[in-house]
View (cartoon, rainbow, N blue to C red):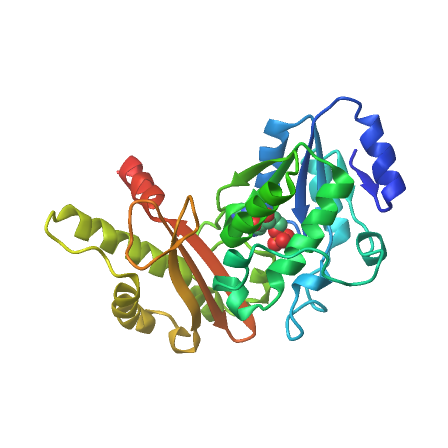
Length: 302
Ligand code: AMP
């Protein structure tokens, strides 16, 4: 049985009932899919008690974003949590999460906040940090599980845990993809036609192409390092016509960072993490790939 906690008092009583058991928190905005459930499994490997929070956080949405139409599917989420043997769902109201009103109370680290997704979603990561700070403070978990899908969010949360000295171990679960390679996301249901869905795959496939180009160059000892922007321009010119709506896909960014430090990289290395975002009509898609991990996986399969 999964218990549903809506108030701080209910949460407090549940925490007390866990006695000395370790608690792992999986923060979500609901509309749970296999990606979220993989995080739950990961949480269960670390702690005896797993709590999933479901809260669509208004402060991380921009004025023109999809806060109002974000899919809210509580009954289905509850059933999914019961099937996954989640111990508790914390589903607070806005008033419980924001007792002082919808204000930003904590800021994302400056070096991370305004790049990549933060550049086109001003204030997004301050909203994320504000809500996660509140969740960490009221739930007090020993573990917090986040998905690599939101790689920049992981870097922001890592910095938050360090700067506030939260006694919480951050657990990062790898990306979960659909069988065709599309990164699972609650927003994928906005992809209405087969053409849109096929075109959305361009994010993953473009990154795969860049990883292969990196590998090919790397094989030649005298070859120069791979310049990401140049390689992307070349490969997208070749790939774009292969997608039914390729011309309508608006790239927001195609960048690489060092996977350890999150420092931007102009040239790929074996420790590069690619991060991409693109708009297809009203939908904004993101994806990420660790270059060497992909190459290693391909080697294993061969
Ligand atoms: P969301 O409900 O979209 O805010 O996501 C909640 C958590 O699930 C975040 O830590 C996400 O990174 C993670 N997540 C969402 N989709 C995936 C996925 N396809 N693979 C791995 N983690 C995911």
